[in-house]
Image 1 (cartoon, rainbow, N blue to C red):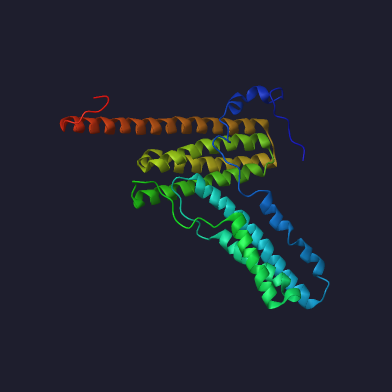
Image 2: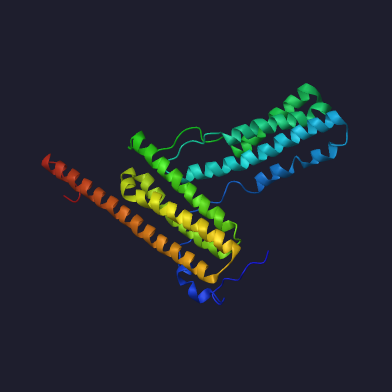
Amino acid sequence: MAERFGGKFSPEGATKKSTREAGSPFAGAKPASAGARVNLLFVAPLPLVFSFGSGPTTLAVSLAALGMLLLAAWLTREGLKAEDAYNARTIAKRPALPRKMVASALIGGGLAMASFLTSGIIGAAVIGLIGVVLHVLAFGLDPLRDKGAEGIDQFQQDRVARVVDEAEKHLGTMARAIEDLKDRGLERRLESFQATARKMFRTVEEDPRDLTAARKFLGVYLMGARDATLKFADLYGRQPEPADREKYLALLDDLEGNFVAKTDKLMNDNRTDMDIEIKVLRDRLAREGVTTKEG
């Protein structure tokens, strides 16, 4: 599908200063794990289609094997996405469903079923086991335990995890709404805002004491941004108007500016707290007769 040019000399380029100057959504990002090797899992079982005309028994077995293998491919992709999200966060719950491990079992079952009619029970079992081992070696296991920050009690970590999970849902809803418009300029601008919001998420995860100060941003403001995005996407999708697009971009500019300012304030407050703790510790050491390099 053709895409509207949005460069420096486009008709809209002169009015997009804030958009061009927005932070890069790729700052600190890592390549997604769910790449070409996962796509191969969707392609590999397709030869089973050619066995559909070999009788009802073969048809049933081939259909079941194909379904298991395609389901395994989908679960593997979703498991890798969940693992990327887990690794990106300081505080995170382990995935409720170990998707990659379930996919490994489905891979083994699908391969065993596909080879049963030609290899017998023992041969099918061996092939299935090899498939499980290769899948685990290629994609690994799911995270099996919760991840938290050192020195922070579990109650505070759970509070932060719940709030960040809800905030991520708001960002996901916004992203899906804008993707439906097929406008790469809007998508890139929203990605920049998402990167800014997630910087605040990481700041709060590293010090849950910031949650009280940031809760309005992670809850009320993001919920309002989600609702505004849904309304804009619905209106702009039915009747595209440049003025509506400009208003939405201005909203993202305002939101991002406020998120940046609040995140900087949280980080500066944390730095001040650290300086105070260091000063108190030095005073205690001085009273005990212990000198420091700066004392």
